[in-house]
Length: 157
Ligand SMILES: [Zn+2]
Ligand SMILES: [Zn+2]
Ligand SMILES: [Zn+2]
Image (cartoon, rainbow, N blue to C red; front, side):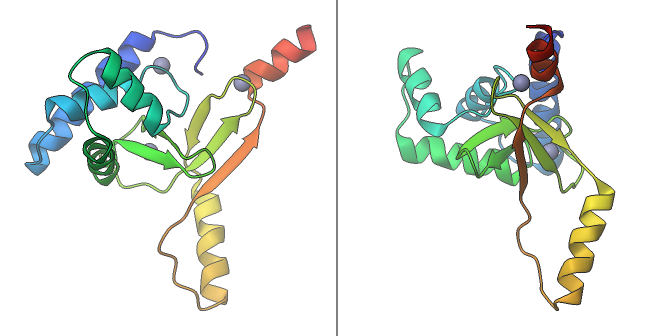
């Protein structure tokens, strides 16, 4: 998905969604939060916090690490970005606003992260927890491998 498409539209949609969601909830989509969200949406790869700090430093108006982490916490709370735990990095959510539990397909070659939401998988996880009398507070499923496009490139080579 990250290869050939109108990515400008992805960025525009992400920023428009964020503006709408924050306005609806009465939360503040500050300039720094907007800049960080736009940086995360530079592509469909997960972005590390120190890369954001580097970029903020080179584009002027550098921000201190705690400020950037607070902005990231805000974006996560509002569901605008997700943290990829296995990479300790962040990706933009393509459908923020609706409550969802998602899974991530992470390509180890091109580093594209695709967010998928499988109801069947969520139901299975719930059943497992229920059978063990376990209460889930956090659910993270990150699958590492190779994406369709990279597999096709490999075959073609
Ligand atoms: Zn895109
Ligand atoms: Zn999402
Ligand atoms: Zn790939």
